[in-house]
Each structure stands twice: as C-alpha cells, then as structure tokens.
Image 1 (cartoon, rainbow, N blue to C red):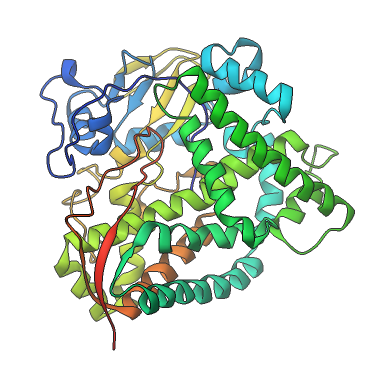
Image 2 (cartoon, rainbow, N blue to C red):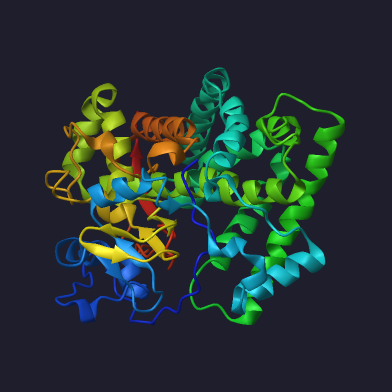
Length: 446
C-alpha cells in the first residue's frame, strides 16, 4: 500500500502533441520554462525535476502557489519535522471549499458520505492512535499468510497469460491490475465477481483528482465514487453484525485507542478509496507495469536478473520504485514560517515533496537515471515515504512486487515490446505515475 495523494489543488494542464516523451522529454533551460502541470512534462517529468534540483530546489509553482521540494535531503528534513510541518490538507476544510472541490463535497452530502480525514492526512497523536489499528491489521502473522496467497495468485495469472495468449499479452490489464487488486479485494471482503467494477471505481477516483476537469466530469467521477461507497457500506454493516478474520473486519470493529470509538463510516470510506484501494492496489499495479517496461528497455538487466533472481530481485523491486516512483509525491502544510534550502516558506503554505525527484538525486544515488542491480542503497528511496508516515502497507506491496516479478521471470524466457501497439503513454496525473497499457510479445520457458 503505497501512499496516495488526496484532493489538494485544482490545476489546469496544457495540451501538447502526442509524442512519446520517454524518448523526447521536455527539458527546460530556465525557470520561466518550468511548467509542472503540462501533459508532456508529466509524461516524463524527470528532466524538469533535475533542473529544479539544481537551480531551484525549493520552487514556488506560480500556478498552484505550492512550494515544490526536489532534493532528497530537503524532503527528508520536511517529512521528519513534525513541529513545523503537518499532513493536514485543505481538502479537509469543508467550510472553505470552492470550485470543483465544493461541487464534489455537495454531491457527497446529498447522495453519499463525505470522506473523513484519512490516515495519511492526520498528525500525531491522532495519526499514531489510528495507525495502531492498521498495524494490528497488517501484523506480521497476517502478512505472512497473505504472502502465500500472493505467490499462488501471481503464478496463476502468469500461467493463464502463457496458456491462452499465443505469445502476446497486454501486461497491465492481464497481470499488473488483477494481482494487487484481487489481493486487496479479498482482504476487504469484496465479491470476486465485482473486481473489475471496483477497478472502474478506483479509476474514477484517480481521474477525479486529475487536472482540468469540467463540472460535468467532477460530478460523473464523484457519482462513481458514491456507487463504491454504497457497495462497501453494505459490507461495513455486515461486518459489524458478524465480524470475521479479514483486514476490513479489524478496521470496522477495533476501537481506536484514545478515541473511545471505532472508525466512523465517513472515515472508513476515506480509507477504502484513498489508503486502501488506490494506495494499496493502483500504485503496486503501476510499479509492476513500470518494472516490465524497464526490463524491456534494458535487455542486459533482464538477462542479469534472470541469471540470479535470488540475488538481484529485491534490489530490482527497489530500483523500480526509485526510478518510476508510482506515488510521485506527497504534500505537507507549513505549521510555522520555516527556511528550507535557503528559501523562506510562510506559515500555512502548501509544500509538495516530489519524492520522484528526490529518488533521482545524484547527491544520494550514483548514476540516478539508470537501473542498477548492484546498487547498495537502492532501498533508501522515498517511494514509501519516511518517518511516522512511512507506508504501512509497504511490506505487502514489496511481497506483491517480488512475487509478480518472480513469476514473470520463471515463466517468460524472452519478451519484447510490440512497437505498433505501444505508445508507452501515461495517464496525465500529478500524484500517480500510471502506464496506460503495455503490449508484449513473449517466448515462454519450456
């Protein structure tokens, strides 16, 4: 479960031509040319991040007013400075919502449940108190039990691909999506026949926090999220009557220490979409897709990984998260006026920790834009955040990545991207890095 950003700001994205920016990235040569909210910059943001790291490591975006932090050490400083920075988000200030955020809020009031503050948006002591029930739900014994499920499902999915596709597949929809989604659906008590409907709901949530939405789009995506709320509300009610041994049953029924109550429906609905399904499924999907894309583009790495997966696979998983950063960043709110990197950040300002930029900081990682199976500090990346807000689902995400890639290695001998079917485009999204599709041609292991 990797961290997922909430509804923080409303932005506009400028449209550009359909060019594969993985090979032809936007490379600014001045601060005036830096445009973070641009489709083509989002397609490959790393040259822009590199420019900001060097020339303006704490940069106030003129469009959003947010202070964008791109150096690794500055990000760690902020993430660990609980006295001066808060996880509180403006989206939780319901009385002062405007524009699209106000539209969505009123729709939730009318037809569903206004999502409460999620775990990711809380500070201690509330964060620590609430996290304790998640820590119980993700206790080692349960993760070990789930590990066997992940392994079995990964091999089942890849065997289905090998058996029925005549040597071709669309990896995202046939493997990367169902592996973490089915696992989290099982833990959340969802009917397995509803997996793809839930995927539509999570897609709607992601698009609902995107750029440049019309009022019609906002209402459409909000209505889909409300559909999901009603679906899961029935499960909440059932688990209150008849608890079971699922993760969701723990979240529904365990009293939060110090609160004198269990989580409310509004809080549970926030957890379901933000921290559980998006944070715990979508981001793992995106890491699996990114990993296979990186292997296709780096055949020597593929051969080296296959030669000794026991030695290299853990590092490979960390390198994928470091290089592609499925969760591109997280926000903080300045509780006091503070100076970071020589820049004065005023009290109340929104601060954007671009972890994807820090994960390629050359001051921390040698040859940061390259995948390196021998990298000794690969696990030092910030893809799961750090400090008290380190991703509580990281152990499960790591197991899903490990077994997903292990099954792929064990069943696939050679593979390549299919040029005529791939444009390798990502969904324009400031918070998440989402590869739309990945068509491959493969030779199975005999």
